[in-house]
Length: 181
Image (cartoon, rainbow, N blue to C red; front, side, top):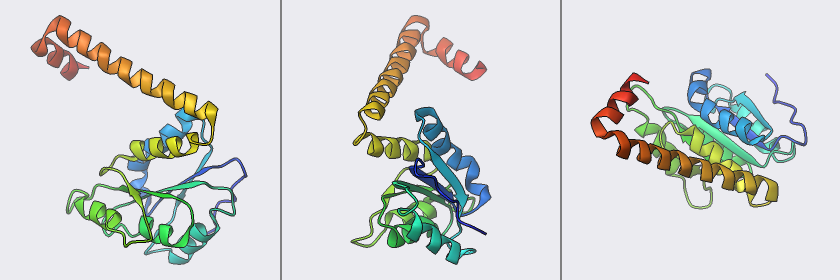
């Protein structure tokens, strides 16, 4: 197994411990695509492919990456181990598990020792991890910052439109429409 050969333009690495995490991590992938952020996607297991994980984490910054989004379920060591090995910011995505509904993953990711931070989003919320990565990159890119501002305006407009519809038809009719959509 080889580490992806990142091109200079790729800024975000999206990694996961297993292909079963891919449905969750699609949220981050979709956000990167929506904002035009070049990214790579890889399966990098902390437990089953530890040497691959070490190589990925230690070389990420030399390959041009700026941020790593790491999703993991269960023991969820991947985000913390990658953060320990890489100077890049790491955003951890706790993946929902059957045994403990992802709470085990959340605790494993969020409880990092002093000196090795991992930004952590809600269980299963890779979309927010993608948005956080975009916002981090936007701090150094006026064009990307403008896209973030536009995105924020769009979600405000969506909420306002929903409120207007709710006010117009009432709660019961609105809910009926939600269920049938």
